[in-house]
Image 1 (cartoon, rainbow, N blue to C red):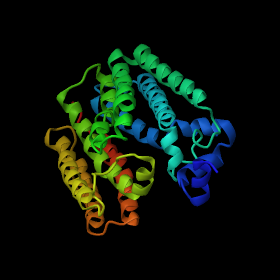
Image 2: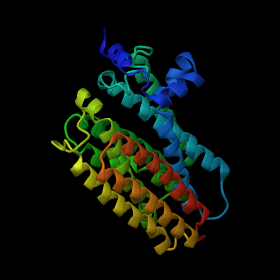
Image 3: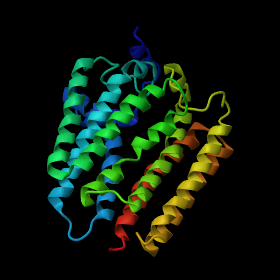
Image 4: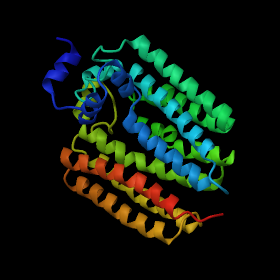
Length: 311
C-alpha cells in the first residue's frame, strides 16, 4: 500500500474543507480548484481589498479594483498550485494532505506545474497591464519568496514561519499599490497587522498537526518543544503585539472610534483563546484558536474599511 493510500485508510475523516470542495466540484475540475488553495485565497483577496479601499482617494474605480482582485487571485492560485507541486512528497506523508490531487495521483505533477506557472504569469501580466507595475512586482515577489525561500526552509528550521510571514503579509500592500501607485508609511500598518496575525494562526495549526508535520519532516515548531510551552508563549507574545498594532490605525487617523472599539473587543476575544491554549495545550483548544484567527482578520479589516477616515 502506498503512503498516501495508507494515510487515507488511517484517517477517513481528514480534511473536512477538502471533502466539501470535492462534493461541490467533482472530477478533474474540482481537483484543479483544490490545487489553487481557495480557502487561503479568500483571505488573500480580503486583505488585498482592505489595502485597496483604505488607500483609496476619491471615487471607487470598480474596473481597477476588479482587475486588482483578479490579478492577485491568479498569482495566489499559481502560488498555491506550485506549493503543492513542490510539497507533493511531503503531503503524501501527512493525513490531512494525503488526499490532495497530487499525492493521491489524480493529477500528474507536470500538469500541476504547467497549471501553476500559467496562473502566476497570467496574474502578473494582468496586474502589470491593467493595474500598475508596482502591484505586479509585489505579487510576483510574494510568489518567488514564498516558493523559493519559505517552502524549502520548512524542512530545515522552525524559523520558516518567521520567514514566511514576510511574503504572507504582502496582499494589503498589493491592494495599496494598486489604488495609489506607490507605498507609504501608512501601508506598513496593514502589512504589520497581517504579519503579526500569521504567528498565532500558523503556530496553532502547527501544534494541532504536529504529528503530521513530524512524519513529513517539516520543522514547523521550536525544536524539543514537546510540551508546547515555548510555542504557547510565542503565541501569546505575538497576540499581544497584534492587539497593540491593530490599535494604530485609530491613533494615526486612518480609522475612527468604531474601529478602535470593535478591534479592542475582537483582540480581547482572540487573546482569550490564546491564553486558554497556553494553559491547556490540547488540539481542541488549538483548533478554536485557529477559528478565532479566521474570524478576527476579516472583521478587523472590515471594520477598518467601514470606519475609514477620508483623507
